[in-house]
Length: 419
Image (cartoon, rainbow, N blue to C red; front, side):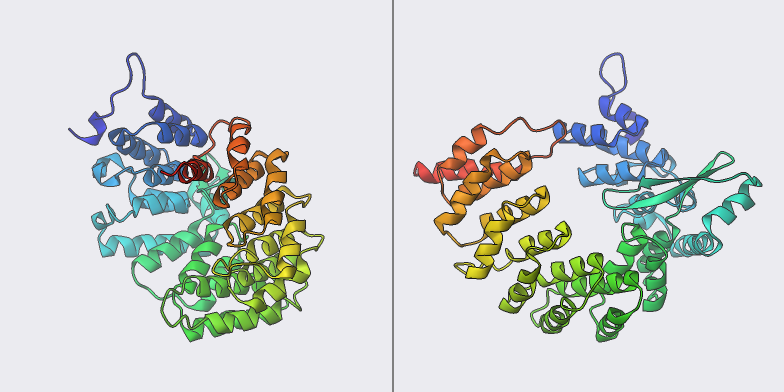
């Protein structure tokens, strides 16, 4: 039985998953995927999502176990159509490892050239050439996948997303073409940080983990434009973060660089990235560099401090300064800051009763997620108040993913009862 023949619907209508894919309801698709373990239906839904140019939904189906290899070639879009669409998520779905072998190197090279043509020509120019229409383009910002958004253009009945820079990078990587640092940086900086071209460039360059790339990224620290400094900071942070070698050659240089950088950066978005990078080092110098920003007016910086102070779990206790800062941050006016500080305390090894009392005080927080993290922390700290805190939680909003934190309450009760 082929994919196109499976997953027959319920009596009298189309299966709910297929209907949700057909209407482009991403939230409903995810909800149905969490509830239904029918993998055959997921395979069929993946074929439909790709045919409908719904790359974000296709990616979601892949995350939940859809097997694109069950789709026949005639049940999917041609790769050329996906590249023309400008959706990196859609192209990525068609380049899944389970079906990548369907495309020969010559076809992939042609698709690389097509993506480069769109990127260098410009979406607006190419759309006008193809449609012959001189009307004004309609542009909207759309979510292309779970993390990234792109501009979508409509002209003369044609719809194209401006994601060809990211598609070009993906195809070059697949073809093992080493694109220069300068070219990848230019592609990223032509877009906002939440555009896939930015993310593709930083991740690809960070995985190179060579001194040439490190030096080029470090040189951006003094660039007069904040966007360049932000790109450099993110790339340097990811280079250290992705380094899983025993040598960890970038740990020392990264800590030195980010410690100095934190004292001189004036742009708040760049500074937030620098502080996040510092928080990924379990070192007293990192804590010392973070603490001056614990009371900063910008919530992004306070959040970076809250998260960063919790990344040294091997220590039995926080320093006095870190303890004081976390206790204040747990009462912050910003919800994300409170939640981050509570999580840092929850997962730290410091069992000072002042922390369990501070977490217990958050069991009545106005934000449900803060309360969930407080319950989680109390359970990890073997505090009985987690049980009542979990019982009093308001119902989770529809579509809420499984809250793994609440599993800690069950484990605590088993420990308490000697199981």
